Amino acid sequence: MLFSFFDSIPYNPKTIGKINNELTGDTMMTDIFRNYKAYYNQVIGRYKLRNYYISGAPRPEELSYQLYGNTQFYWLLLMANNIYDPFYGWIVSQDTAYKMADQKYKDVGGNQVLYHRDGEGNKYYNLVNKPGTVEWYDKGDTNMLYVQYTGALAAVDIYEDAILTNEQKRNIVIISPDDLSNFIDDMIREMEIADQ
Image 1: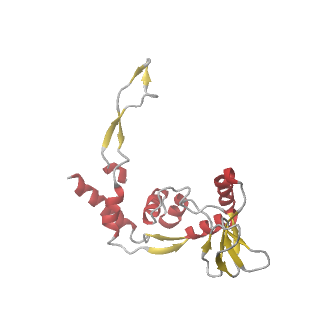
Image 2: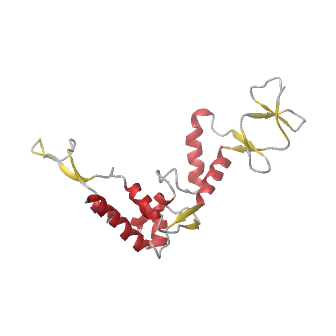
Image 3: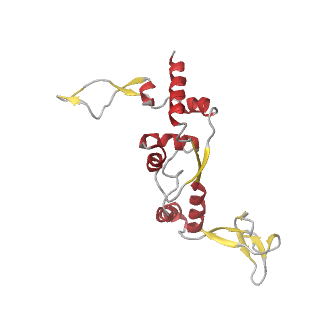
């Protein structure tokens, strides 16, 4: 598909390809470092991206199949949403989000309060509550001299933060399935022009 338009480069695999204990030489491979995002950016302006809400936690390949009938178009979903790491940048199951939080914070004490939130969703870091009041102070202000916030705040631990962050990944943009064929044709045309 698109990779057929990428230049080939010689690659010398030193750990494989030995015949009779001698290296077989260079192997021609696709240059995956070609900047295909530049071609995407040139073409995408001609199309209107649609908002899409992800139900469940399908991997990009699964969602590509659901939307376009082909798993190979997962890269369109990632590019359209500026996701460079499909594991950490894409929505995951709740269980996976919890495991990722455990792994992320295992060396700094595990489950703990990361921040507090007010009723409007604003985040406040490193605050402690003065007992018996609604006053909040910076953790470093041990004498509680400088009020940082007054009012009710809700504590958010590593698991709740993981779920909140994960849920934000449900809203993405997609290329309409009706536009897919034209988009791919335009993208290939841009790559052909660049090769001339």
